[in-house]
Length: 510
Image 1 (cartoon, helix red, strand yellow):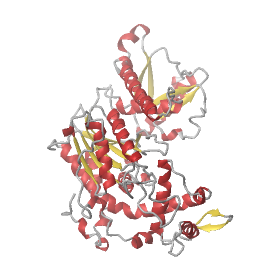
Image 2 (spheres, rainbow, N blue to C red):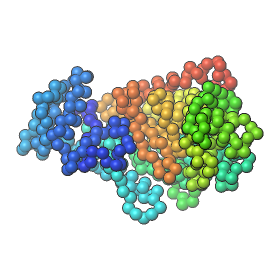
Image 3 (cartoon, rainbow, N blue to C red):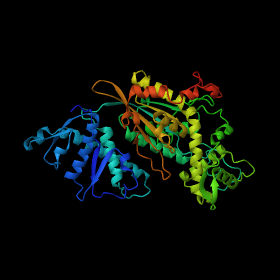
Image 4 (cartoon, rainbow, N blue to C red):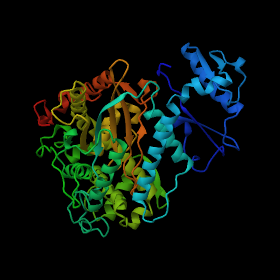
């Protein structure tokens, strides 16, 4: 057993289409699902699973010997071309059965630990004392996560370092219309754009979740972490709150200092010199798109923007796309604070949300190079520093507290197929750096969490499966370093036409 290959987990349930799974496409997950009345493996299930494996082996021109004990129903082996079956002798199973050599026990231990972690999180988020329950889909995802990410047949490769790029926590709306009953600064005493109290509390809670996810790296030793925030104070407050929950034993809130560049010198968020008018140009050609109607009449993007401007008391102004995006983003964030959204919004939610989605896609596409180019190069440099064993401190994990545009740029820099993924508050991308026990080489495993849902639940980690890595979330360190150091935004950002962002040169402050 070289440990070079590991099959997807096979999960068997009682129902072919359980209610908890019906809304998901199972092909998007890293496990296979079958069902029968007894939730046990049968000859047809085992045969179907093996047939898919045999086809895969034929495609790559590989043959294997499969050792099988006498407890598993035996399929018709003559139908397989690249799998040779060998039954283990009955009296030898207890001594030489490969999976009994620690693998099954380790899987059970890992699954139990992750299951308890999910239950603990559910208890923290529950407003009642009722015992939390997990459905089959949740349990299957936990089991697959344990199998895919914790298991190694040759002994676990060492998780050396963790790199996290995260979005800030829940913040107050950034701008408010002059007079609006719902979108106004009264409920947000800490100021526009700053974290709300719920935002601080959520960041503290997420810090504890991350600590449970990475107990070997996030241990409580303050020298194990390196943290950097963007110049926006909401990012700094989020970093301070996360670090407080991990490294401070004080019962009262005591934020921890992080590195923050002075205003207008942060090249990781280098779009500050783009005016609202320039950002609004990204909508040219999109105003005439037909969307879901308001009032039963044919409706375009421009119609919805004018409608929103009028309802916000901005009828004397043009419906500037970027202004409307900021206001709609503020209305969207009200639900995180359990605040009422305007009736004109809720009654036309489908149309307005469709336009908000178009605005978000266009503005994000415009801003990705400015939020991604230097950030990904800086992340690559930080990764190499730790891989080479040269950091003065922060050798266990590195934290970059940034913005939703930063997360989008990072995901796009990994794989253009990730461009449609949208990070909520505290959404994060996790880069795990491993060192192989066999040859000492380094590789990375990639995950992300969508962040907070509006009900306060923090989304579990999901693997980021790369097309160029055979559909897995594992990539050689050197490949990822090259992908980020010379990233997809380089041509755009080094083009002289974009010289308006003059302060983002190589000598700009990081």
